[in-house]
Image 1 (cartoon, helix red, strand yellow):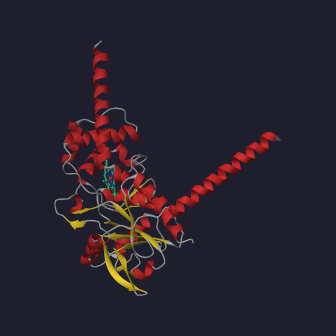
Image 2 (tube, protein in one colour; image 1 turned 120 degrees about the horizontal axis):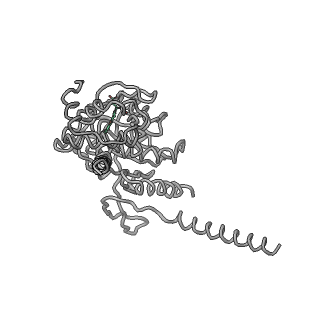
Image 3 (cartoon, rainbow over the protein chains, first blue to last red; image 1 turned 90 degrees about the vertical axis):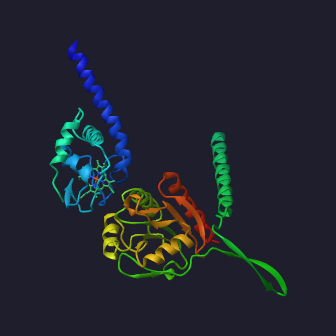
Length: 126
Length: 218
């Protein structure tokens, strides 16, 4: 009984994060990375299929602080800066991380706010 | 046998109908947009009223290859123009995705050019624009990315192409500007304005380019 109750509560939360994350992704990210996460030519890198999906701490930092680097994604080089999203709250970052990792990565469960908070405290500076 | 003839007739009639529709379409002229003025002039001793349409004036900008581009570049061509900047976080990526569709629909057509003006010329030097064009997969000179004197870019944007492009600190990325695609004919009159952030706007533009090109076919 207990197991059923808690598992479905977790599932419910994952679903909520996913749906919220989808909306946040649509407004904040899809203009560059596209709705399907495949990016845009050699201008904006793909998220689907990217190594970054397996590093949630890095994901949280990129979402919040943007990025200014030269990177290889799925074998292609990108070196255009990504603007920061300073106004996103920790829960919003967690929701976006949830959306992209569940949608295009191997995750099936939501990313917790606490995890995002500690990741954001240790971001690499560009 | 009979059925075959019938089918043939239906096909024939359909083609005929389509043909007629096509003719009608090519007579469907696009409007000339913008402010207009009237003058009176004398032709063969009679006074007639002449309409002066909004016409894109002469200009001089620099493209992604470092070449100077003036109105001479679009002589005997129709063109699509827009305003953007390479670091724009919001609508420009969407506009560029849509413009690529327009570009591919008429790729290699010598009668159509695309001129994208940067409204952030201090940052968007020819070198920056070259990289941007390359990353978009654009080669050759059908689609040019223009930079130049800031006041001139804003002036032509506001007065002639009728779009707002202003530096605005409070806006994201520091600029507010419209997401419009503007269609200009060979006489340098504006013939259509489209919402370059939507699929509908883009498809309408692609169709209207065809309509405008066929005006010159006769």
